[in-house]
Length: 241
Ligand SMILES: Cc1cc2nc3c(=O)[nH]c(=O)nc-3n(C[C@H](O)[C@H](O)[C@H](O)COP(=O)(O)O)c2cc1C
Image (cartoon, rainbow, N blue to C red; front, side, top):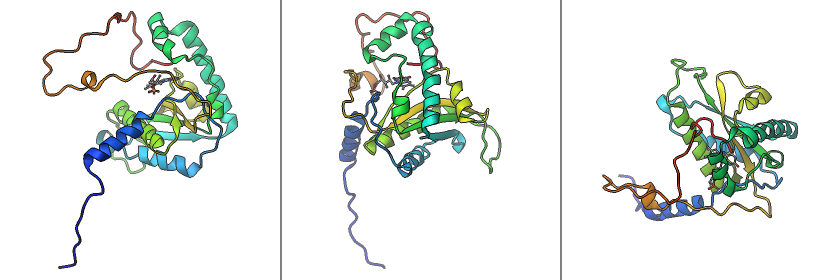
């Protein structure tokens, strides 16, 4: 028999989970970026991490377009701001504007030019892999959502800042980035370092006992006071901020 040595995992699962939670608790949506460069190789590593996500039938129905060209970023900013102006002036109903108010967002998006990278995540509505068995794709939104989440987590883990941005409708991204018809814009993620004077809104997380149910719940938590049923709520696919 070959020699053996003791195998002791470096850390306990609980300690590792705590460490990951600490990293993820630092994640915030950043809207004030520095222009400090981020090397392309680092962006590639983050996208590779995102690409490890599970997906329906392993179709990996995503494409990450990494944009650093200043002229393209400017074009994206101008088009995004045009959509955002319509959102704030016409498209958003009162509830939506009320929900957005604590974030202090408006139609101005300078970070789209300042952040060194805009990573535009597209979902594939048909498979285009050269070795595909069929063109079909499955659970595309779930799959791309998971990949996007891993991308945000990988960036956070690397000490970088992101924003999950949805200047909807986002068809302008297909046009500006010259993407084929079966790729549909899913998220626009500015990526970089936060500005030195970056601030984020004071918001809170729901407590664990309101997001987790152990086995069968006997009583649901009462609704927060003052919360009214939403009139004409936007659908889950057309929300934007
Ligand atoms: C699907 C999705 C779309 C979002 N769209 C926007 C957006 O268009 N503009 C923006 O400033 N923030 C956007 N956000 C960021 C949210 O406002 C933010 O995640 C939320 O307020 C919680 O703040 P935090 O990310 O700092 O924890 C979006 C987030 C998600 C998940």
